[in-house]
Length: 145
Image (cartoon, rainbow, N blue to C red; front, side, top):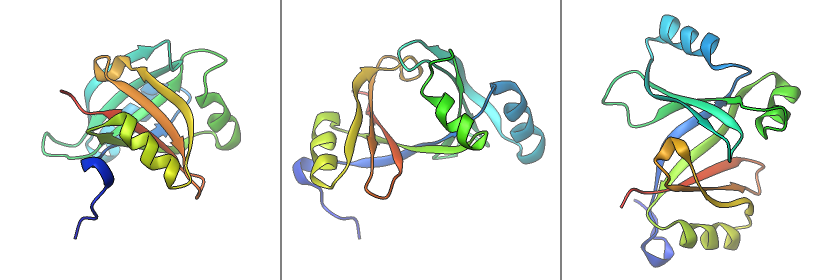
């Protein structure tokens, strides 16, 4: 049974973000080892200071893998790479109402770590970042109109 959220909010798992030092080697590994292929990108996002590429196994995949590499030395992804060398970084959820989702997240003990900003990889749709009480980083993407 799906819980009801205030204001008709809806969330859908869009992708799993994976921090990598560079896109090429992991893209090749996922292709050769698991049969994943590039479905979008690569994109350079100067606002987020990252390069990203999206992979899926088939057109029927509901959730994609996003590989995220630093675009510059001051990229936020650098801290994850310095700590662990990379790996699982965040979950991304698409939402039908970004501002309402942020209010809902705050009410549930989350911290908004990055306010809504347009993202190159999502054709200018806005994204925001929240940090949960359980120390998870979530990306929220506004759904296409």
